[in-house]
Image (cartoon, rainbow, N blue to C red; front, side, top):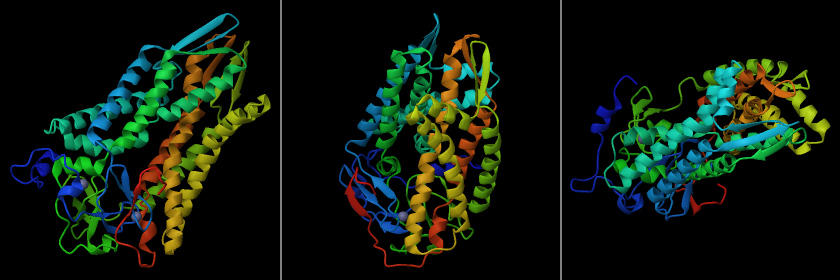
Length: 457
Ligand SMILES: [Zn+2]
Ligand SMILES: [Zn+2]
């Protein structure tokens, strides 16, 4: 980022003279020919007019291009305010308490992170506090700031920067994963001690659901149209073809089709985001991150993820050892959750991404659809591996009854957290458009499939 984006944004085309600073009419009512290049397969299509509750999917790969909501600004604003309120409540009250043999402990939500610092695990503590509280709070404040400006019909300062950043924060918010981690921890210790859920636990559940609804409610297409109108597509853009051979690229942030310079780079005329025909060195970077994740996966499994002290007896347990223990206790469902999240998902993701990199240039159109679906799945499931890290954070904070019963984090917690983060990054550096580059051209429609939201696309 050599150049401050504000100067670039000043030169961006705006709405016609005399129009309100924020355009609250739906984009389809004003701009007639709206083109998009699919972020996953690079296909250029003409967007159909959408009614509230409808979405448009790419006709070639099925990726959702645009979702239209009813009253998008009011909806996101209300959800974000409610989510922030729920987070406030979750911070203010006790989260869970446990007692064994007359000794007990009660924790508040932030302690799930701060206790780890006491055990010399500041990186894991940072990851926990960032993913469950700080990033979601920043995201919600950003949504409120942005929508407030749109509702007042005068965007507040930094609106475009915030609108650009929101999508990048989304994969790193893990309140929903934390809830599953909390449930797993509670079931794990329910047999050994009595556990009580506090008000904060329920408030946090509400927060996780509201946060998910807020991120789902954001209509980026409408938002960017309201902030900066819809500049015309470059002269001569052809639909029903890939964008790259035409020297064009779709913006990943606002969707606009832009012309690139001869080096295949550029800046979006509407949001100012960097554009690339294909992510640079996508395969090399993905490979490098995959190797790093595979290397980290060794200590993650060899070292104990936590050590339980019960009646003075210390017993360290690894990830797989923990699963075996749960099976022996008869907790099959929890054992299955941990096994899937901590073993199957990371290994499956490494294998799937490595396979996608290997066969990227050997393709047929049908094959490309399947591979894009596999890529989407690896991107979606990656964050759920954090369950085990959250289980450690919760148990370490909660189970503190000295030599009677206590739990310490092990070195594998950091290694495993690194595996999760690195595999997420490797999925992000892989450019799914590469899958489609070698596929033979087929007679694909030029207009997206338009249907009600909720139908899988
Ligand atoms: Zn597509
Ligand atoms: Zn853009």
